[in-house]
Image (cartoon, rainbow, N blue to C red; front, side, top):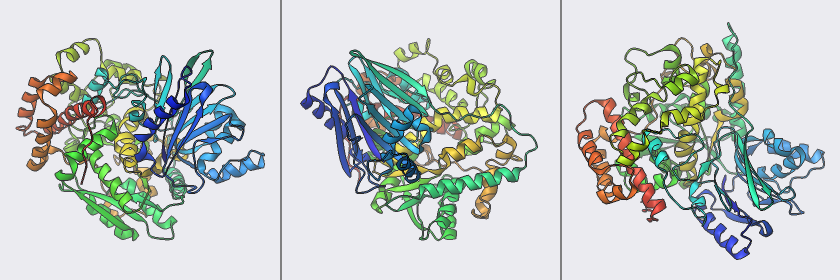
Length: 640
């Protein structure tokens, strides 16, 4: 795992200028790769490739950028490419040697052999930037699910890219400025796929490549999708469930075994959920030595599941590292640092908790863990998936209400036209948007007269991938193309893990497992009202009985309204960040409206509304933190 960045400005060929600019861009990515730094320049092109390295595989021979001996091809890779030893051996049999023993070394010979289709042979999580000097062509590539981030900005004089937006903002051609439309999306929690919080900076979408071709003195860009999570237009009826149970079991074992390979110890994240417990159970039997398990505990019984995690750790003989977090750790300086790393707002302090956990992992001398992200997306684990297919259950919601379930059904014409229904996952955020409208500045309220953020998200979904599909498939697909990449794998995943130079490996998002999972009939994914039934059955002898029989639990940090001490901690941040001067300067929110809202929010007794209020306060705070950190250049606080 690493950080990659660079730029291509054909009119700028001054070596000193290129090196100075690249160094600044690499400096802000040190946390992604503290072990080594490398660069490669094509001075006649004004092109620079930069890399910061976190050494996990090929500890002594993984220097990047990697280039061919003739110097005509160069590549930087962020991520892990599994099965690289076999691929390297196949290449050797074809007289195509890999220059080095690292996993990344297979990329250039594969490109020379297969052209752009080489990416289809890669297994793992990765972001790749490859330059072909002979063709004067640059290729930016992102993995199938967007586990590894990659951003870019196309300017009049060229293109700039980076693993994180902050490196792009260090380029002199890019002016840091928050985007008003993106601010509205952040207030409602749902970003448009391919966008960021900053004007002019885009995210390369999962399963896509951006091809940049020099034509004369110009650079011409073309975006191309090379993979998608494609559900079938029909499913087998009356299928034997055991066939699919065995199919999931076999592929998950292979995915976990593959991700245990490293030249450093690999641990596991362990919550009290089926996903991480399954990962730990399999890793325990696959490894000869005990597995190190890392667990977060919260000071609220309603949100804490560490007791189940402890049962699993005891069952497997894992060495458990338990991190207990209170308001002291979830707010204040840690909240601000997590916001800087996230580069966007987040609705729950789980992101801050994940930042603390990755720091603890590194303190224990671990650089890599296997995680359970992606299981809910593949096997129908979230309550809104079940609602879309089976309908609303009496009394459902609980602590989900206001956060990931709407208390009343919402309809939107753009989603009705796209899907035939409005997916339940976006409905609570539609209600959040409704509440956020009353906090916006007059300028943004005017903007909403012509800009429909809910419709914009729908417009980013490929209609061909949802038309004619089962309702459960549609719900899973649309969530995966929006919230999985924009939330779970960013501020809930890579950004908080790599903030402390720690690599996460989500085994469920192995594409061999994912491509199989979409073929599983809906009534086997969710059977007799039991979510993730097929996974439960595949892991029935691995999981504790208490967990096997347990319903989906909300893995979230306790919101501020649940505890007066947390509420006071949030109020301290509000007093510092949401001042009239700051709010007028940014121009996103109206101070008087926000002040009135906060006064009423602290008096709210309805749990659903209180959770929504908590979400809005988090987003409002972080928009102003981002303004201070990235636009005004305020220094980051230290965390004890």
